Image (cartoon, rainbow, N blue to C red):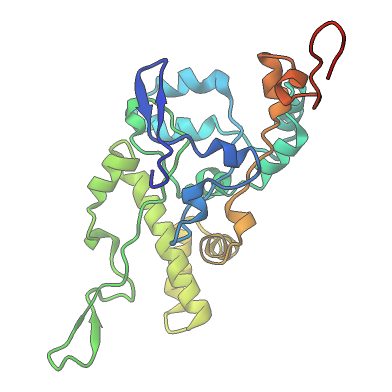
Length: 271
């Protein structure tokens, strides 16, 4: 953490790398590193999940872990989920924040964000979008022009600088299919936006790429908007912390807050 927010847990005897800047979250602000991220590639948002399914999801084979992890994430628009959440005491404003969550779109809707090292069964709620390499090109002998390494406008996924197997060991529990799906979807968005903005690529080829990537033009535009043109409020959806409810489990809320600005001393009531 560049902001020196490492936390030492005296109960476990271990240092925790990140406390997610919870004092900032409690006031509706994004964590410090999210807020100052130069690349604007960090997103924050709540996910509703079924805690009763965690043990079963963590007990499946490695090849089924990612899908099981996705299945415990609930649809915040499902009327049954909303009803059960309200019955369980979850405030409505938290549910509304979950409906606006960019993380839900990346993980559950578009399925391009993957959890790191899920084979350890920690079921993390931290996700990464596998990186797609930039355009690779080289200068010709005259040094006055560039030629792309690939025959296509953008590089081939198979010739990426980061091997697919390496990315799969990080984010796919060794399964190449999940990482390949995410990379193909990103490349399809690139080609589609190139067709829309420049128009120098074959439309039939782009439509075929969208079909192979399980993507519609509307979804491609949505991914482009959320990754390139999103506003601050779209990147960071911080739900209300409702501290006054959480503290009720430990002590009287009025004592926690401090109810008076005067202190009476002695039996005579002197101030």
